[in-house]
Image (cartoon, rainbow, N blue to C red; front, side):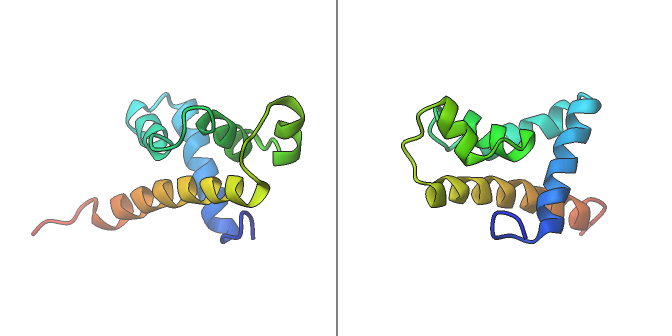
Amino acid sequence: EDYGMNKKIVDGVREFYRKAIAENNTEHLQIIDDAFSEFDPYIAPLVRKNLFDGVSYEKICGQEYIYLGKQDFYGYCRQAIEKIDRWMMWNLIYKDWKP
């Protein structure tokens, strides 16, 4: 488990991000940006750095001030993962669905 979540979900979200970057898929990049849109503008890039670049909370704290404790910080990570994963699942399940 990673972030207190299923590792397959976390790895799937990271792969979705890597593919979106590699393919310059603006729709998918927008989905990723939207997952962070409700976060404090100061915290959002730090959470992204942790989630997508693998920089630990401790290392980020050594470089920048974070007003959140570790548990709250990882709560933001989980929230972003859940939003992106929910979008991915919705589109996989209902992509070709017709009423």
